[in-house]
Image (cartoon, rainbow, N blue to C red; front, side, top):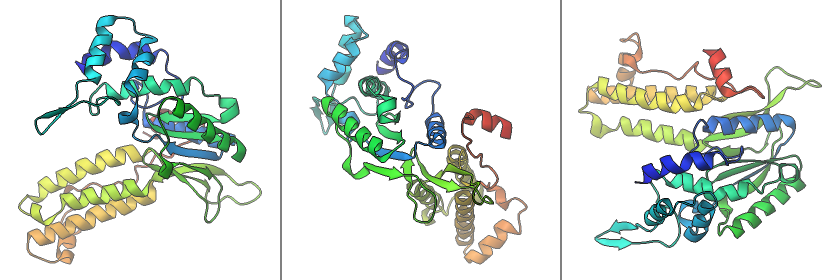
Length: 331
């Protein structure tokens, strides 16, 4: 029923959504949002407000959400179904728990309802006064030209969200100045760590600087944890081919997302870590040493027993050049 509601509602609201919204929208992706950061940093907006909304999906007031929906929807049957979906509740230990706030988390309708509610923030945002807003559902970044503008943008976010019954997550809210050099700060957004760097081989006075990005520490640790899970001792009963297939499946998915960035060093490290873990797995499976397993994987096999590598798959972003065009030219 939620999926049917989404099919009906999405085209109506999609016609009104602002350009600054990227999350869970048709024909828009995380890399479209990331490209905006590259372009705006190149334009000189290097004061960044990094934040997200605390408990966004569970904190949205249902009455105000319905008011936002009713601005565009007048069909009473559709509105009745939507109210029923919001009030359906959750069955836990035989007891039905109904919340008075929030959207049905995990359902196909929740991201759309979140965008409908936060569209009230998007449409009152003034780019000239407060900078360029980039919103991916409840994750927010504002690219500003000066510190004062960044501070005003943060204050504006707090004011507007307070009127919507929401608040920013204090632990993830900060203002970052993108500058090059040792000790320079960066920020995390959509799995990437972003930092202003100077291109190699360039010297003063013509220094080519740009906003680089690579997998964040959290994303890198997730990759290591997943590789470790796939090569645990309790899986020694599995054939080597099955483990390789699962490792390759994860590496292709993880690398397919993070290849659109300056991720070469991280890719090398993750590929080497996967090789070492798999070699140790092979050694344990045959009751031999790690060194024996490494020789069997790298020397006795021409292709590391089928284990893929992420090296050489990076596609670096370019300012004012859509990432899809850059990827197509690379291929």
